[in-house]
Amino acid sequence: MRTIKVENQKGHEIVGEHLLQQIREGHLKPGQKLPSVVELAAAYGVGRSTIREAVSALKAMGWVDVRQGGGTYVKTVLPSEPRSGADLLFQGAESLIELLEVRKVLESGTASLAAERRTEQDLDRMREALSQMEHGLKVNDTGEGERADVAFHMAIAAASGNSLLIQLMESLSDRLTDTIQKSRELWFYKEQSTAARLLTEHQMIFDAIERQDNEQAGARIAAHLTKVEQVLRSGLESESGSLPE
Image 1 (cartoon, one colour):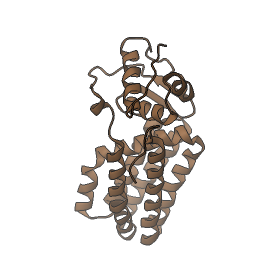
Image 2: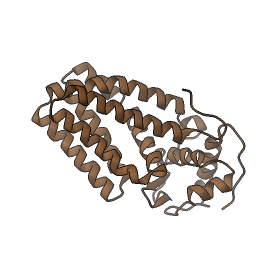
Image 3: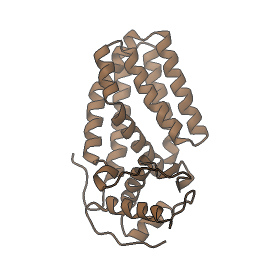
């Protein structure tokens, strides 16, 4: 495939737009496997993190599928109404980090309340989400894992019994999906062996809520989101700069 050299502070945008052009023009065909992260990084003359961010954005737009341990493939059925422009294709890394900061403050308190107030019905919802997350891991279906991840966090909010907290979580649901999707993709790219650890962290949060240990529930979800933030920060750093501290 034809490649270009990239020397730009927003290299991930240029890489992503060029890959998208390759797909639109048929140079990369539906169902075709993309070169590896290492190969793409060498072809474009950028770091691997730049490639990961570009691919993550294309996946979020529905142009590619990322299979855990199996590479990245052009979607068999391509989007019919593509959005255009770098601002629409690529969400700012800083906004994702800011959202995680909000999530840590909000969800640690929500989990503590959930531990105090959860019902058996609430626990069943969480168990179902964990079961779906585990199934997605077994069959390498990242989409199922992402949906189950969101469902788990929303179930915790529902278990808090606080209507305002529930509304706040619902208002963040779209962005919640964004951060979970991007962090999972970067996590799997960088450390595939930690996919099981991701599930374990959610099971530990559930365990604390089930035991009605509000202190541990809040601490465990905060620790989990701190790890997610670390993954995002390391994965979204470009060669020319880093995310703000």
